[in-house]
Length: 323
Image 1 (tube, one colour):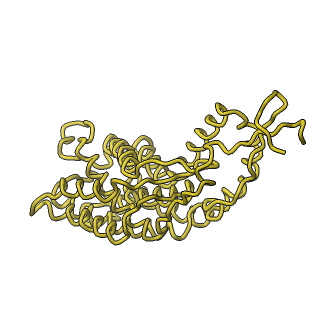
Image 2 (spheres, rainbow, N blue to C red):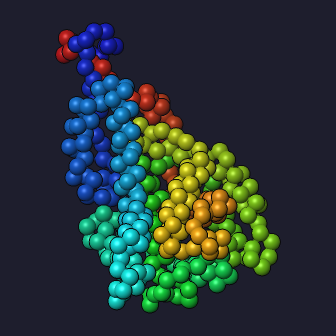
Image 3 (cartoon, one colour):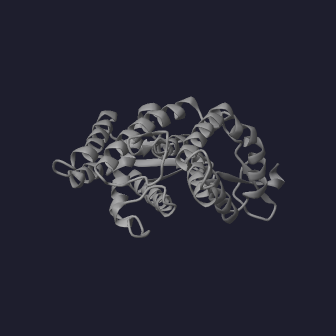
């Protein structure tokens, strides 16, 4: 018999863990799922401790989602600090070889799924093509030498774009994304195509960036993403999610320019922050990444049943005297 908590003998009964998309995709996560569930049952027994547990769990999930991108940023920074200046293999080439090795390791250890690898490959090609064009028109440059390059673009740079697609794909599974009022897939794909085309055409024609911002806002204005940290789904506007991710990419880009891995014209006489206008560019480019991942994962609607709108903390108090 279940009764409300009335005395100190009441204790929380935590719902048994259920299989998640992340458990099915990554065996390493599934291996620790049972142990984590036991820890959560012992620890998350009050609202304050549940909040602390969910906060830590959110951080762990984000770290796992950033695995590829975080590793690439770590390679860029560490190679700038410690890579020998006179090494037979140029720094950019070493980064390219390291990125390939990292990709192979993640696949071999099943820390990355084949679907994620496909997204990385496609976005690598798309990103490299844009890099070749942008460096050709002087938008930015790579100051060091490399063997593995196309034009003025070292091939490791494509992995930086691919890391964004990898992050979105991993978040999709880790947080079990669901959506309300999501746009039609064809509309998202059309917007992504227009954004990508504008990165090329605005150098010789009208810059439609403002129009594309407006189109993005209209298309996703009512869209909410529902993400699960632990037991229940939280929600936030998808546009806000795009802005937050774009902000972190802008911070990572500042690390890239600080380490002289690539530079912008305004940094020719010394390092300064990447201009905030690039934040808008990354916001738009993020839509292209999202569209590619959405083609693979297919957005699923959020079920608005009473059961899924239950209390935010799925903890039931049971009077031990009634057991």
